[in-house]
Length: 303
Image 1 (cartoon, helix red, strand yellow):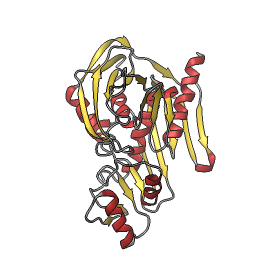
Image 2 (tube, helix red, strand yellow):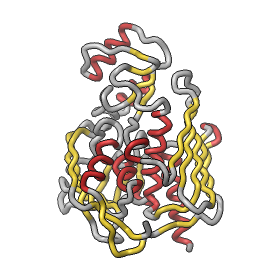
Image 3 (cartoon, one colour):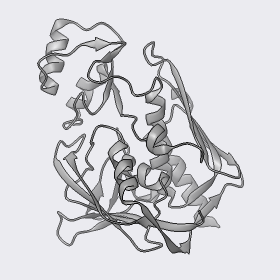
Image 4 (cartoon, one colour):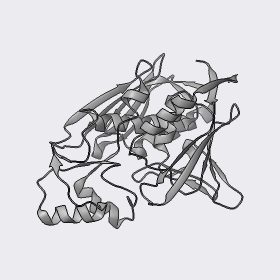
């Protein structure tokens, strides 16, 4: 499809922000061609807007945050991933809080609603970036590498390795043959148990729950730790099954790799152009993903 597209009708989502814990209502509206994907903070005076573009990224701690003046929106990667990967080039997202709703920790409901209302072709041609040379971003000490090389079509290969006996080394790939809504969108965010206390001290995951994230447990947990987890997440009891807090079964054996793929698809969409190239990502995260998007953005500005 070479023409731009937008959604046919508005779609609305409500829930809590993962990190702020604030209740939020977010409505995705059709938008005119060449508008791109833009957030509008309807709860702020003057309803300021911020475009979902790489140069507007201001924070990547446990999610991607964009800001332009007074308009700031956090944890945008899941809704952007769903819209962009499912063919939506233009959308106006009205939101009444500083963070998108976490839903069930995946992009499943976002993708489902996009499919329900459908998309419509617009008059303008799509904007592409054809990769002509290799782009590479690395953090050697952390084993992080995101590389983009020339290719006729867009594909993304993700490999995750956290030195975890539970998670192991996982891999997944996206290309045009993959059914994003069925194979990528349902994959939930995750956290290691030992990170939870740290994140809470940092004022994060206030809206988190065992229903909206996979919690990886590397070691047997004591009764006191178990009680603390139950208190944190408002549960009466909780068990560990196959190295994960037992709330719902894994949706895929490599669900963590698939979720990291979901994330990078959203973060690289912040280029604002569709990429013709092959992406290979080892231990990717929001910082590496958005740094790569910014490098590509800079390259475009020089053309």
